[in-house]
Each structure stands twice: as structure tokens, then as C-alpha cells.
Image (cartoon, rainbow, N blue to C red; front, side, top):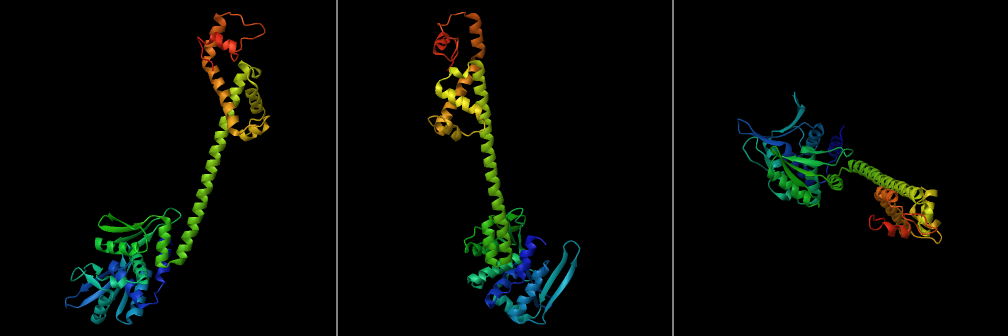
Length: 353
């Protein structure tokens, strides 16, 4: 059985204790599934037609308990090739027909087969009666999606007046129900999971409510865990990629100019990064003497990266200069690209730092 079927099965077993609540629920059932038929002899009959066996049972029970009907109601099953079984409840006693119409404040748009409408809001004036009316409407023409797949609650209304009437009742419970035109019907729907839980509470489907809440909690936990895992994975990947880039830059500087040509702070952090490639910035900062914070470590590593990028950009020009300009270095100095004297010599041609 689908989740929607389980909700309806639970609601079909709920019978209101007050007569006014049972009348309100019957009014909703007649509004969505009822019709008024007039025979050739002028006699009228009330009819409820539905494909839902649970609804037919509940309609029969409500009529019996509310109007003390015992024998004048027939519950028959009509075979229908396309839609399975069609259950029909017929009331033919003229006195009972009038009593039901007067009690439920039902008006029909035509003499026969017309569309019913609750003409007086006194039927659902109390909160308990509003709950009963919404319950009857959902049993008659509502559905709810499987919460494992998504959240969607809807009631298909036959006219704009009925949909507006039902929307007003639901709005009184501070639920944002909206209406959309679908083919020739007006569909009242609720999409948010928390508000669907409130709708089940309004209809007093407590078992279904708990099942839906359990599913919502489980889904939220899964989503929360997935978000944390994705965030941690992204942070780890970012840290690893940064460390790999830093080590590549330091290896390049070591190969081309030597780490000893760097100033003391840069050389120290470069050797620590090579020695501890998996260490975080905070851990590297604690290894320094004196200790440095994360921002200080990051600043030094960025300087190393800039030096390596300059080496990559100017490598060809430096090689050309070395081959073309046999200038003499001051005594005791090597042609070190990081040395201030060397930078002065090539500053007119190469931007090194």
C-alpha cells in the first residue's frame, strides 16, 4: 500500500465524537464525491460515488451514526473496466435527503447531477469541525506523495469556489496552501515538509504523522552528514593540492638557486615543508623558532610561490643573459638570481621579484 493509501486507511477509521464534526466531514465528502439525482417521478436521491473502499465504509458509518439511518442506504459495488471498483452509497428517503441537505448546508448547482457546495460556513465554524472538513476532503479527493521521494500534498477540487473555501479553512491553521489550475480542476497543494506534517496533525492522522517525521529526521541527518563529508573532503583536497604546489615550488627553488640563498625565515619554512609535507599551516607554525601563526606561515609560503613563479616566467631570459653577458660577479659571489647584485645587473631586462 502506498503512503497515501496508508494515510487514508488511518483516517477512515477515525470517527468524530461530536455530531457537528461528523456533519462537517459528511459535508466535505458530499462536496467532493456527492451528487443529487432527480427521478422521473420528481423524487430526489443523494449519492456518494468513490473508488476508495475505505471512504465508502466511512461514509456509510457516518450516515448511520449521525442520522440513525439503518435500512435506507444501499452500499453497492459497480464493476468498472478502467478504474476497478466503483462504490456507491444512495439515500432515497425524501425526509432523510432533506435532513442531510439542511444539516450539511449543501446546495446544488442543478436540479439533477449538479455540483454541491457548502453554502454556510457555520458547518465548519469550530476548529474541530474545520479539521473534520479537511479530513473528509482529503479522503475524497486528496493524495500525498511518498516522503522517501519528496514532499507533496494535494486535494483536487472540482470548482474555484470549493478550492477557495478549502484554502480559507487551511489558512486558518497558518498553512500556506496554494491553488493551481490543472486541466479542468483546481488543485490545492502544499509542498513544504513541515507544513505537510501540520496537515496530517490537522486531520488527526497521528500514526502517519510519526512515520513522516521519522523519515524527515532520517533524511535531514543523511543530508547533514553528506554536507559535512563533502565539506571536509573539499577542505582536504584543497589542503593537499596547496601542499603539493608548495613542495613543487620549493623543489624548483632548491634546484635552480638553492635554499641557502633564501633569507632565514623563508629557508626555515621551506625545509620544514619538505620535511613535513602533510603538516597543516598551524603545525608548521608551531615547529618554527620563534613560533608563527597560520597567517605568518601562509605569508612565507606565498612568497616562496611568487619566487618560483618568477623563476618559471623568466627562466628563458635568464639563460639567454647568462649565455650572452659574460659579466664578472663581485669577488666571492655567485651569479645567484636571488642575490640583490644579480637582480641589479639584470633589472633592465628581467623582472625577477
